[in-house]
Amino acid sequence: MVKIGVHLFPRVSYQQVVLTLPKQLRIPFHNHSNQKRLYSGFMVLAEACLSALIQAHFKTDTYEIFVIFFIHIHSCNGNYNPHLHVILAGGAFFPSN
Image (cartoon, rainbow, N blue to C red; front, side, top):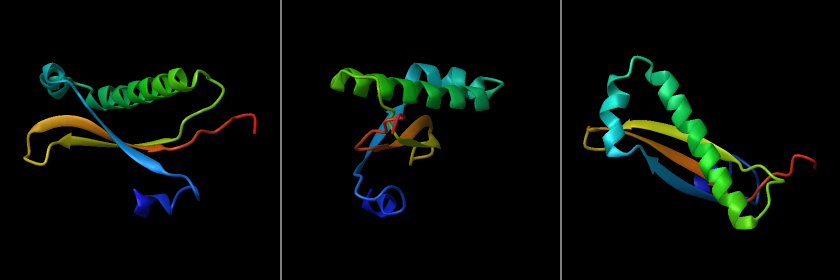
């Protein structure tokens, strides 16, 4: 994370979160005619869940989180395993500032 952090916002720490599609949904995802829409929805849902989790922890919804998503379709052994690598900033942005 240090290497990528120097290219983003100074003095902000970053964490990686990996979110994996449940095994029961992999075959329907793989066979769906519009995978692009499903993957896009997966990222939107992931951002909403992370944001809700962080807002609940800090008991406020007056800020926005900063995330970067990378989608991987296969695991390192070549099996179909859609998952997201999320770079999550260790801070928040207040839209009013």
